[in-house]
Length: 294
Ligand code: COA
Ligand code: MG
Image 1 (cartoon, rainbow, N blue to C red):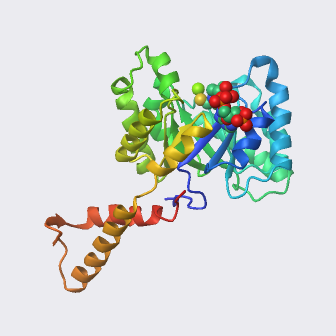
Image 2: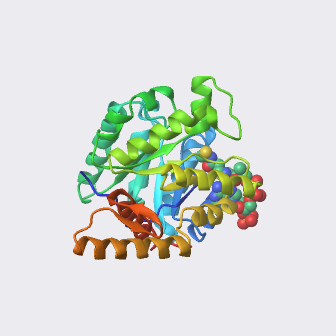
């Protein structure tokens, strides 16, 4: 099974409309791990071509530092995706995002398009990464085949708003109405060694609400969260970085485990509680993530 790509921290992923050079410029210097330039729903129908040109220009001219650069294209069924990839690949984005992914065919179509441009442009084969947005009921039902469709796939993005529209449920702050799908996405991602990114929090003037939602997403196992406004990314970065106390405890646990193993004990008592292999793996995950701090 493919190992999770650790080149990018991917705690915060910030969306912006692809026709706004101003917003892309801001993101390129902002406290964000992944910049997502959008060509889909954040761009008006009559600005699609403008956005395509702006994203290509941004990719070729701006310095994004260590930030990951992704482009969300329109769904293959719109017929726009081939030209969007053909234009933007000149700027060597790190990957593309498929919106409204519903089955393996959606991913295979993108996979073929990417293989073609990699060949044409002399790029490393299979080098361009893919991410999918799970935002329909069918997408949730077909998670397994989506996760297995292509080795390019590195992450699943959960989208509550579109899903609510598709299902016909009413969005509430507690998000219990989408909890099944939110759990299904993070579980599928873990099963197939993919990253998982939680839904956007649309009220960008409510930092306390965002913090609560981000912490809960991390408790569920999500590896990062999508954002729609720059003031959200520092909160998300913090929520998805282990605290110094967590790192310290994880290190002590891993050290104690090594000592107990050497002495021939599998399960043992650590600070008054039973510890065995699953807790050690969780502690190792905390240590692995601790390299990424804002
Ligand atoms: N990315 C980068 N910069 C952004 C940004 C974003 N998503 N949202 C706002 N900004 C910038 C603004 O340009 C402004 O910059 P300035 O201070 O240099 O002038 C600053 O942050 C403050 O923005 P603000 O005035 O509070 O918001 P706005 O009215 O400009 O924009 C939204 C509000 C919702 C339209 C905007 O946040 C946005 O476009 N969000 C992303 C939408 C999107 O991509 N959706 C698709 C995925 S769900
Ligand atoms: Mg959507």
